[in-house]
Image 1 (cartoon, rainbow over the protein chains, first blue to last red):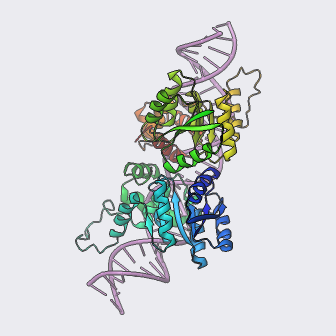
Image 2: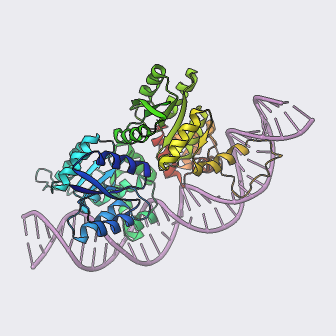
Image 3: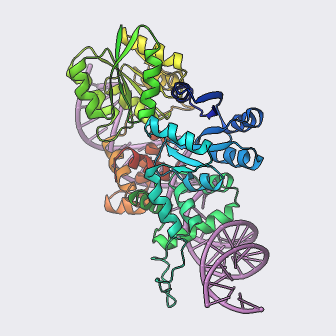
Length: 221
Length: 221
DNA sequence: GCCACCGTAATACCCGGGTACTACGCTCCT
DNA sequence: AGGAGCGTAGTACCCGGGTATTACGGTGGC
């Protein structure tokens, strides 16, 4: 029997998950949490096999909760769920130690098999995200084929680093530099440095143009 | 027996709604639609008492679908649901002829009583939105009754004027206030006035958030 | 071991963006 | 005729955003 803890701030969503899971005879819902702090506390208490973790929750969000649960060292696996396809948390969620990442518009069957997968130690990622993840990791490979523009770099054309992409993604959420600093645990000056480099590389005059670019290139939206 | 059509692009969400509704012995789900076009077509076919309508759907969105259903002239009532407390939708949704407006993080009981309310011809609005709506409508009454809330008029829910929409559209092109002024042959101060009103009405903190809203609502992009 | 790159951070400065308030002419409606 | 809403415009003020520059620890490649 796989024990599951549901962490989602929407009661209706929790209800749906619970109904779906309880309809399976190899699963049982041992608890519901409405935010990250609750999820962390209840995990330490109940030691569920799997935590079904929503990303966007008030207070402590799903990413940070995942990090704490994973650092807790138990055998609990975290399966992250999000509403949108290209969530800015995709990478940081997996980096935080999540065992899987599914989008909420998945078929119920997909969710169930995802839970079973992570419960048995496998990892699972939504098909719609797989390609992007691959792209991101390929991006880390040695650029043997790509000669470095040693002459005059012309910042444009230079691809954004992972961190810069992450920052651009949250800029696309409408966050201010101060908010980005807080939520990413950075100094505001650091955020400004990143933003400056993003603008230079993308040829944007200000963050508005950068956000537009992010939307046009489907990085967000 | 109240017949309900569920219109939501997320299968999981539909599943949750269906389970909740079917657990009530005075309700039955007669169909599920994954987008606005489907919802419109199925309503014409099935004549449900209530359509549970999600706002954000691919293709024809919930607002436009509501408008068409209401214009269709049947007895079907539309109850709009949205994930976010986004006032822009609330207003245009009710304008489109919806009988109610609930946010998705409502308690299941709240949703059920909402469905029963609109099925019997009543209107229903999420408590979190009620005050704003009242303010907005009072705002439209003869000024005698309304002592002009000079403190916080709360312009949200007021639709953008043509000019404001135009300005928002060019803001979405990444233009600065100065550029907008030049190309539209206006004084910069005028542009600032418009921008300020746009931000107030859309509940945006700055132009970045306004541009994001423009993209999300397909005004640009 | 050295060098390039990345991520972090700080400082100082300037300017555009946003707020608050006031105002005036035009149009449409009653 | 009067009022409401719209588009226009101005002033004064403050703050966040963006620029320029410097710097330092870690990592990975050669």
